[in-house]
Image (cartoon, rainbow over all chains, first blue to last red; front, side, top):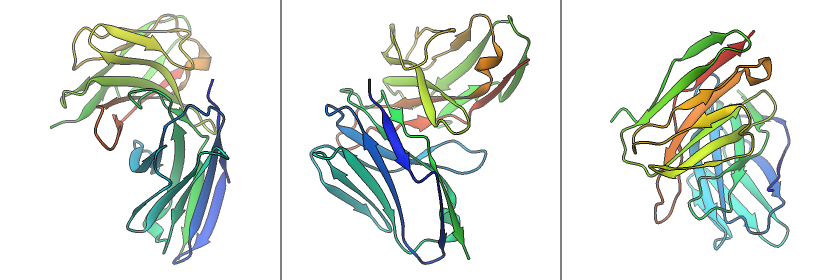
Length: 113
Length: 114
């Protein structure tokens, strides 16, 4: 089955710097790659996603890149702010419905002001 | 819209007891899923459903049952609770959009098995 590895497990950056989180997946048939943000004690919320027919997607300060050949995808956050501090999860799905997600273990992002 | 709701918020069980975690959504979403979240392991899929009357197993289905008699409800049953089932349980719903397959998560149920 699918296996998703996520690095780093923790990341500390200074406010205003960029943060990059990387994930690799094992199943070449995976075709949908979302990123979720989870604040302490809260539910995960989607921040950006990408399908396998797209190489890059951007939404304001957040971007995701996908390299299908290498089977890895990355989350880029620019101009980080203290409210970006949270746990970020990547996931991959090969299902037609995109709901059979396999998640990475998560990255704790701390933005220091 | 209430979105995805889960009850109870907290639960303590003794080993061997059974219980049902409730999940409901009012967005008319076709797809519903149950995940468990353990420290350092992300979220793992337990069971999922692509519509009323249709369910299937995820990564970690052992010890859990589900049913989907209506579009709105997707309860998760623990048959005989074990300490290894101590976790936070999230229910999620989604639809097959044109661009995104966003999953909407409920607030979670924190379960402790002693």
